[in-house]
Image (cartoon, helix red, strand yellow):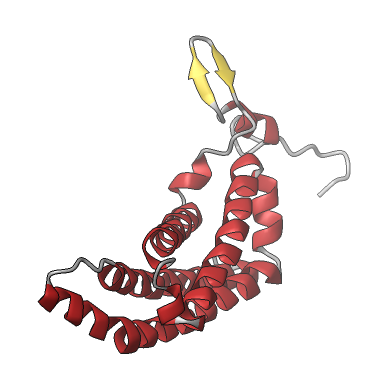
Length: 190
């Protein structure tokens, strides 16, 4: 190919300015908030991050609202699960915010080892914290729940904590799927 040949890109073929004009919200003849990468939310990576955020938020809310009174009965399992939720919830929130604002950040971080290690660690931590919480809830809270149930008292910690450790297992599996997707993205398969 001669050095003087010029390769012309067809219009709308992925040029950076063409992509930027399609972002944001259209109001009349103008586009606003073009820095927001709304396409991320409908991608499989965005859906996974949103699931991780919503399910983690659900677990943490249930822990704080229904589990604080029973924390002394459950013991370290409660505090371990709460710590796991808090740590991964804040990091997932930061990642989701960064990916929403910058598509470039998504591609740079996603192709690095960070997402694979982070999601793998989150998967392992959520699954282990859920199994430990499940053990503690069934050993320490279930007998109290049966006692209150037969005496007419209301003890809502057992059903709430049961929902939390089940939901924590689901969050762990979602992080596991995200680990696999991040690994494939890092290796260039998707």
